Length: 214
Image (tube, rainbow, N blue to C red; front, side, top):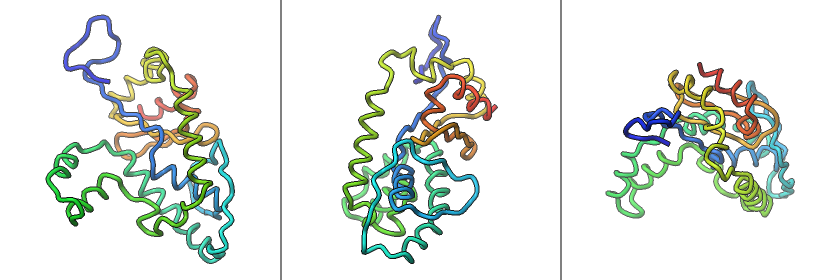
């Protein structure tokens, strides 16, 4: 949402660009894993529980010791993945990607820089090889699509433009949402806000969230 020149009658500042990432893949995986495996996680400032609880995974191959190891690692991986999710994408990385060969180390490194830190980097893919993850992920994506406003003026950023503009002027360029319960808003780096989907969907709570950036 940006224009190169001012548009008369349009209240949206022509040079304001805001990115909304409403299903950040690496964060979604971590949120699902935390609840599907009932991980015991300790730490400060962790995100609330998911709105839609995934089906529990009962995997005899995952021992109690493994679950303890996962629980201990989860906050660290969450913080790293969240920091990456809050950054604005660097288009130069995609330009560089086009110049690399399929299967080359250079291409793998660029893809990792674009995707960011994930659970799979450290523990592999096995934890997600269950119907619980695929079903939960697909159901959530369908629900988000069905709830998406059909009119431009109903989009949260248009609806609460008067609160968004001061936050943008203070440096906000990206909003990251997670499908967790209640209000939960945290600043991510120098340019982003993390919040629950419910926070962004409700005008009063969204305005409160935006005000934390000013």
